[in-house]
Image 1 (tube, helix red, strand yellow):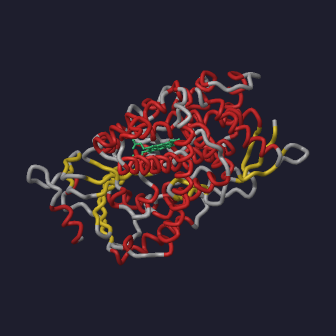
Image 2 (tube, helix red, strand yellow; image 1 turned 90 degrees about the vertical axis):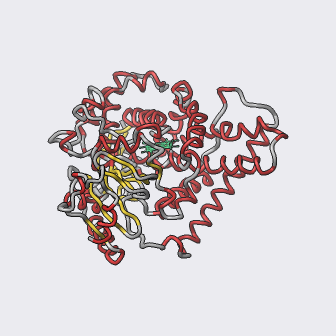
Length: 501
Ligand code: HEM
């Protein structure tokens, strides 16, 4: 208990220990010596195969689940050098996410490898963040996104054609869809946001950025013993090499763009994210010093890495669970297909107007994001001693916000919280959560995901064309094993039995 009591010394309200942290409460304290126990918890959780309707939280975040079940909804844990508080009350989570200047991103205190991947918008804080966000927001406005639907459709068709070619003479076959869906989200980001070709080099960049993130082991896995991040290791060497290759590739793309730009500025409609990142450079022309030019290019590389990383694993993750869950729930698959045929008819050209009329599909994607949120947990560091509800939290404490757990709490979502019931969203997200603002797959507040509408449009474009082309069910080899690897991944892939319509 000693470490924790040190933490509580700061947790006072007007000189009193607040209700939430009275000493009679039990707290969890894990010394560095006991880290293997946490690792064992994960190993045991991951050794079990779930039934399709089982709760996934004990498998993807066993440590958080156990802590909350034992010590309450807002629980303390002191692990290694840093105190953590798990906050799972939606009101408190919203406060943390709204006050982004008081509660900042935790990259600075996580494993150093993360800094090889994370830069740009998601890394910035304060005024630097506001400036960058304001500049990038227009790239994700609806009028811009609408123009991307044809690209999303052609990327979808590319994947569906590959699946068609795998079908046997009777029009059916088993496909492990996971990596194809990654190729889909990778190609959409590359084509629509960076106007670049999706080839093997781009595929490698996506894989490297994803693998680098997994190496950091930040999500829900507080294993790292104090000081471990400073030790040289094979993993770190490999990580640096991977980052170098990604950087070289993006530098080449940026150089090419600068060369093209010498021939003249693109039309407003043709501007992509590279143009936004490099604007300052174009505008400054010869007035900029070498140092300023270098800073702008470094920032452009960091932003490119971020958007490649943020738009890859997340959307493909939404799609892989959407396919698995619709393979389990054939009734919802049939309803979604019926709607697609009814709304889109024989019109082969997807448009934003058509996609926005697909209400059943929209509810299904919401329900998938509720039960399988790709970003299952957010974390923030308390910048200054801060009052949060009736807790006075000392500077430097790490707050863990388990979104996956919040999305499955029966007090919020009802007794059927664990069931797949897309119609709970029929009257909007607030009604679905019994009037509480507790649906946060894209986070909350000013730092909410900038790509959320892009991702939903991308998801709907894929699902609409898929439902018109194939029916699908689980292949006999499928094992239900959601696994925490930065996002929630199907541990043994997603083999599905597809039938051409
Ligand atoms: C289903 C798909 C997606 C999900 C579930 C998702 C989820 C999230 C979440 C939870 C955050 C907040 C992270 C935090 O506060 O720590 C975030 C931020 C962000 N996302 Fe997404 N995301 C998705 C797709 C995308 C796409 C397609 C892009 C861009 C191509 C993107 C770009 C970003 C960026 C740049 C941020 C940082 C925003 C800021 O700090 O202002 N995301 N996303």
